Amino acid sequence: MPAKVLFICVHNSARSQMAEAFLNEMAGGKVLVESAGFEPTTINPLVVKVMAETGIDLSEKSTQSVFSLVRNNTYFGHVITVCDRAREADCPIFPGVVRRLHWDLENPEDFSGTEEEVLEKVRALRDQIRTLVSGFIQEHLSMKQESGARPSE
Image (cartoon, rainbow, N blue to C red; front, side, top):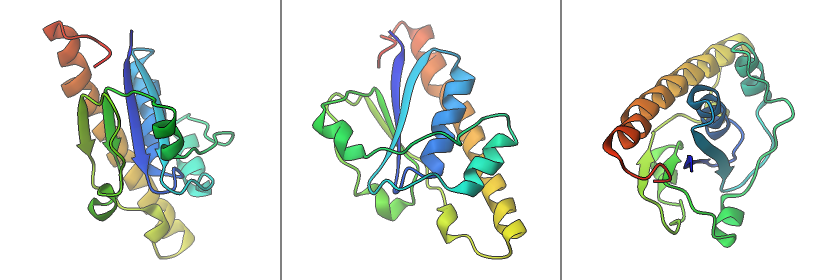
């Protein structure tokens, strides 16, 4: 059974969506991955644009509430918060979570400047998330298969 990973941010509109998409792409079926937010809205159009530059289409992607996953007793082996440190404390406790991680990432909604300057900041955030996801795969998913641990952890 593949590992299960959940990415959480405030609106499920940017950081968690990018992380989910990159993990889906890089893990090649070895992981079941979802993303959710505390206050889900719609996907940030600049995120859709910069992810399309990498060949990933988020234009039809929807957002979901983290609390609906809690109410449904959805289990995850890894829960990764991708919001700033102040909002991490708002994350609910998930039953059965083996590992909880936090990636302190800026919220693109807080970026300012011209449209091109904001777009460049979103691209930098996208690349930072891609690097973090790659490191997560190497550190947490590859190790589990090598050590003989259950892949669902």
